Image (cartoon, rainbow, N blue to C red; front, top):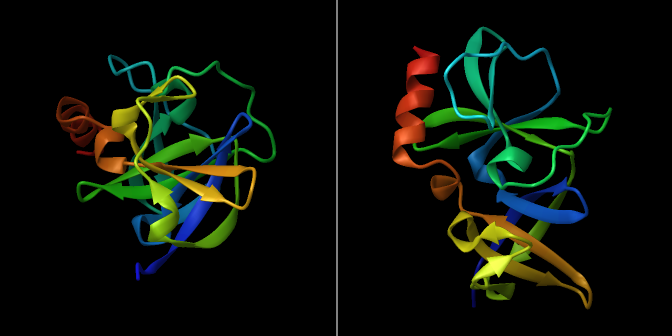
Length: 153
């Protein structure tokens, strides 16, 4: 029998995504972002979170989704990717659920236009709710991580 995991649920548009709680440092309201020149378009810049400079990535941009205006629901999820703190801008994040690993299936080739390499799996919750689990180590590739590390320095 597979173990239960706690998952932070967040939205990009109408789709729900999940990140395991143990990879999330904190969830913050959107704050002023300092732009950094010569970075990838989906890297929005850096924030100063309680004295720590953290690169911020727009997940919509990363996944090639249409940009949306930020609202009161917009959040920055601070996660640890390859021992580095990174903030992900999402449309909303307001739910924590328990998932049994048995209900997480291998992702199909393409889900909602997002490449399967970014996905860890798809969880079927109930009859009509799907939760797309992110593979954080693939959301950023090595060259992007090197560039982000130079932003932190």
